[in-house]
Length: 527
Image (cartoon, rainbow, N blue to C red; front, side):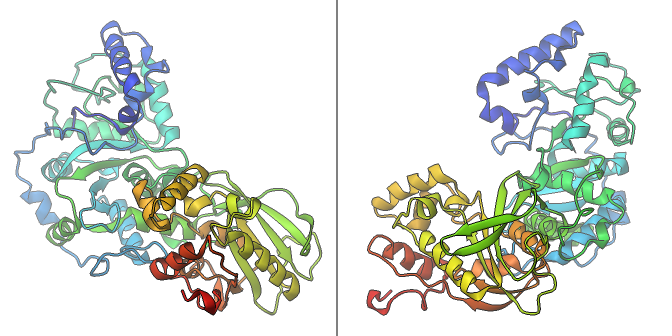
């Protein structure tokens, strides 16, 4: 399991890579506690292995027969994605029913497969909980996968990292488990699978005895990003999240949607890590072949993200509601903060309930008129004519005021369909050269639309809303808001008047993004 690699973190920080390596080498020869220096994190803190890394040569006893382990596994029918493996609009690839079998398999000490996304050549990870590691299972892993590492949550990783100063370096006593923080080894020494499995089990214990560990060693560590899978949808974070879910006694009984109530958050549920390795062959064909041959359950990172957004609390209230008089009428402003990225969002509520009521729609007998509006600095603040965001915002406030029973939810951090203000202005420049709004994003290497509506859905639920009359022309919002206990009973067209500056933009949204603009555009424009 000891190998040469260049981490993704190092690839982004080339000036620090050599210095981090020199510090590590110096510490190894002088037995100093140099690992506590700030230059060491590039050595230790690896998100997931870069695709540009040279594939390491496994040094486990891979030549031993795998037939025994394979015979013990009974093939089982696996949940498979749709024939074209296209992710659904609400984020699922394999579907919500793929999560529970994967968690049960991990808890039972079995390997599982984790695809990254719905792409045909998607990368595949082989994952096992370290407390179930055995020599036999590690030989199976060495046969089918490369670049194995133990993924830890930041808190647990910090405990191991902070203990390194107490570990005697360069101790070659193979009777004790070992950890490795080395980023390069030109001539790796053979490592016994039984010894490595003992190391993994030692690191996975509730209270590891760090004095029994040695450095350098045979097991490489990887640290998941703080904030988890919802902050960074990578294979490392997905493996750590699976460990987290398995550690919770109620993980398999989670609700299909989150009511954003206290107690549904992640506090106090820290997994013991996950052994993750990259499958030698990529693609969904390899997933199905491995599943059929060895009876492995599987899901995808995209499915985990969709699952978490529906089962975990994503927002918290910030302060008490307050009056918000506007030129369109008087609203009550409710502020919420995302527990994922810290971004604050605001909901302007119009209802007949008391001003300080935290759930003004809880006892409502009719559906609320709702507009979920993504932040647009250029259109909402400066009145840019390049989009229709400003007019949509104004129109929605007017309609909610006239209706007397609704909410305008303003989601911040979604500028330019999620790419940010600077990238949006750059995309504008490309549009001036002939690209439409979709192709301009692609030219910048950015996704067409990264917005998610799970946070917004939980805010609406926390306001007591269940039935919605949704003001929108965007079909993605309909699927993005369902699955959280919300029911869209009617679509209300967001009717705006086009202008010469945004007519091409609107045409692109209608023709390429499926926006329903038939009731929005004046017939004279002939979109």
